[in-house]
Structures are given as structure tokens and as C-alpha cells.
Image (tube, rainbow, N blue to C red; front, side):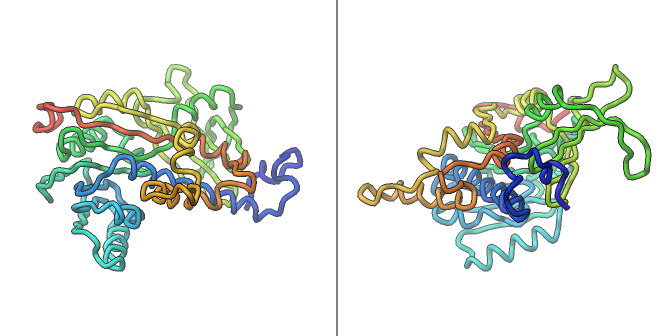
Length: 328
């Protein structure tokens, strides 16, 4: 069922298109995420790298890693069926590189209980917020990541951009609604053309709406799908990461990331200047099919939605003794 804003007559962009256009734009978000994954991998993963993915899901990036020629891949997750799908995907591709998959909670258990491999790159796409609801969970998880990395290696991926959400919340309306148990609660509602974003608000003025840990948001898409997520307080994330030897290198909102990387990875090369590197960039550009309109632009409703996500890149700081200690 479409959200109210998607059928509002004042919606200049969607007022005169078929409702199916909303679903096309939402699929554009998924395609854009794959483009972001592809660009990050091309920038940060090299031949013969040992690669790890935490909260790996169904191993959606295998086709992006095959051309690079990595030495090995290790995936960790807490959801058994997703790991089973990941293994099947690897086998279906002919096992192009050695791989291992482990079912474990890295907020409680050490990677070293499963593998002694040190990694050159560790990925986490779209799920880092799952471990940020509690200080010790976040600390244990990031310590696990850092302790498993070679010096100079990168920990990268993307998450919801809670800083953008928080800034939007300052200008949004506060509503009184009933939750699933019919209890009244205050929320701050951010209304987009493709989404509705609700952030619970305490009736106690002394209690912060956006705490270092434990704040949530609920996003409802115009196709009726929705999910709640923990919000990441980025200053706290950066501080915990530094404690375990991970230094923030870059954090770019999806909109900024697109503007900075489009010239290299967002346009097909001229046939007369085709080279291995330009053909590689061309394959990245192909992932934007379904994202750009006929004028080569991202439609405004999708652009607005993409602004709610950010990339992150941390680097393993050399000679950091904290990596060999358990967090305390």
C-alpha cells in the first residue's frame, strides 16, 4: 500500500505517473547499493587479498570479487539460512576462490575461535547498526574486526546516515501515535516521497532522542515494507573504533559518493579509449541501469532516499597493541 505522500496531489514528481513508478524507484535504490558495493570493492580490494565479510548475508558480492582475483573469502553471520545460501552461491559460481562460512555472533565470540587468517579487507554492508545498540556489543564487534586485520587493511561498507536523519528530525513535526500494543507514544516523523521515517521521542525532556546507544528509527517504504533499526551515533562509533585501532579515513553520504565517483565509475568509456581499467569502470556503470533517468540523472524522490545512507572506510592503524587484548 503506498504511503500518503506517494499519492498526494501536491507531489509534483509522482502525481502524473503510474503507481508502478514508485516500485521502479525503490528497485533503483537496490541497484544503487550494488553500485556502491562495486565501487568500494574496486577501490579497496586488490589481487591476492584475503577478504572477510561480517554480517555477510547471502554473499551478494561474489561476482564483484571474482575478477579481482582475491586469495580467499571468509563470511560470518548470525543467520543460518543466509549462510547456507551464501555457500550455495559460491558453489554455483564454481568455487572461484577458497572460502569459509561461520555461524557465530561476533559481539560475543572471537573470530580467532574459527580462523587464524588475517585479512586485508573486511566488509560490512548495510548491517553495522545491528551491533550498535549497546556499548559492549559494539566494542566487542569492532575489536573482533580489528584483531583479525593486517596493518593498513581497510574495514568498509555502508550504513544508514543517522546524522542526516537527526538533522531532518530537527525540522520535522512531532506526532502522538499508538504503537502495536495501542500505547500512545511521541514520534518525530520525517516524510519523504518514497518513505516515512519515524523516530521515537521521549516525553521526558531530559532524555535525549538520539543517545549514544539504544536509539531507534522505523522506516516504512511506499510499497508497504518496513523495518526498525538501531541508529548509529557516529562520534561514539569513531571513538570506539579508535580504541581498538581503527582510524576513520572517509565517510561519504551516498549523494556525495555518487558525485565524487560517477566520473570514473558511473559512465561507460568511449570505444576509442577502451582499456582494461576503463572496461572495469564500464561494468560498474552498468549497475546504474535502472537508477538514472533518460537524462542521466537520479530522479528526485530516489535522490532524497539515497541521502539517508552513507559509506564508511576505517583503516587498521599500524603497531596498535590493543588488537591483541580483549576489550575491557
